[in-house]
Length: 335
Image (cartoon, rainbow, N blue to C red):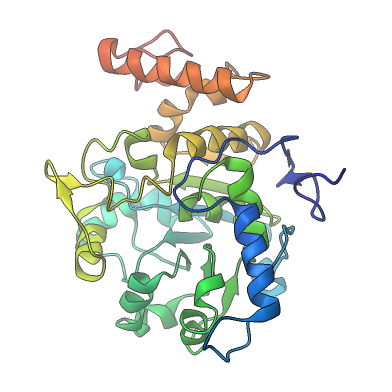
């Protein structure tokens, strides 16, 4: 009987695939169903639509490296920077800018000077979901787009194949679209539609890089959505281009689409990445603290169910006693 991931290989960046995909925790249809729908559309098209849908992917695939992107990334030390407020006040901007390449996520602007001290000034490459609001923001700032060495789309492009993709291909920047078949494979293994940052990290780890320093990520307060999800510059961009809702002075779970992007499943898989790529991936203090169970080896050889149970206990200990499961010390104290 064929494996669920065939005809692709049995791993993602060297991490073995599960024999069976986990429970699908997402309001969008599961990847296998979407692939069946895409196969039908590629063959028959859509009613009252004469456009060509034959390029749509209908199966899981492995990652196809972009040769030009490979030249830029090869052997480089990379700072992969998200917009989480966990960097505020950390004064890590000079460290970020010291890397060979600085790659940011879902932004559409040069970093404002008042954030340089914490977030760094440079943006060499951009990883973006390129949904309609992100494309609108970038279209309004083509000078920023032109300054980039590369633009990487780390999101499903299937429904925008005749709209957004064609717009982006007119922009003055080299463009790499991560294949939908590969993103579907990642989502199926993780168990939810992944954040742009997680897809971006996996994409970059397909290349021969020296280091991937991941910073400015917090998985929306480790899935708890406790406060502002972004620094204020990124939040202003969201308010300008995205329809948003506030709830208790923070972006609502509906706005952040937690119904689509289950954070707990992504946190688990990010931990797997740390297990398999600890010689390349380095973390900022926030991530070191919150993923110490993985980096300390406390979760080695544990099942997904066991890991997630331990993780819930760890979150409870942090809230109630400021302790962690892995270190028996106060949260925030890295050994």
